[in-house]
Amino acid sequence: MSTRSSLPALALGACLALPASAMAQVQFTKECALKDLSVITLIEEHGEAGDVSADRLASAWLTMLDARTTCSEGRIGEALAQYQSIFELGPVAPLRQERFHDAARR
Image (cartoon, rainbow, N blue to C red; front, side, top):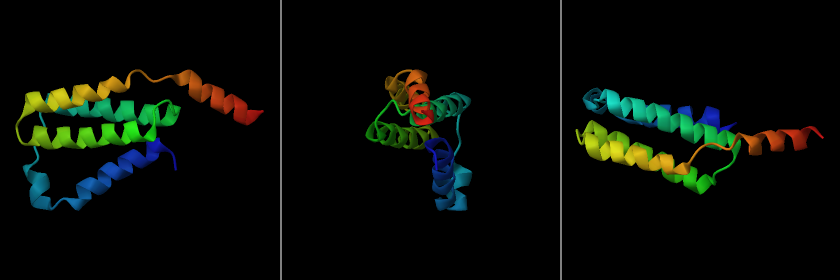
């Protein structure tokens, strides 16, 4: 199973583990939702490219979960700062993944 397909499954599992009353109380601002989507995409793309260690991706994932909680508690500025810190992973290096696939074909 690739990282791209497993991360959404983990997110779904985390949501399903919450009681319905807790999920009803979670309110995301548009800013948090947009950052969340960007961060999920970044983490998935780094997972696919294999250009960041699993430890760093796990740490980014946990920071994202913390940011979600912070946002749902109404501390939007703090949540946005947490989301922003995840972008320290940097841009995805697609060439590494292409090289891996080229080597596998040989």
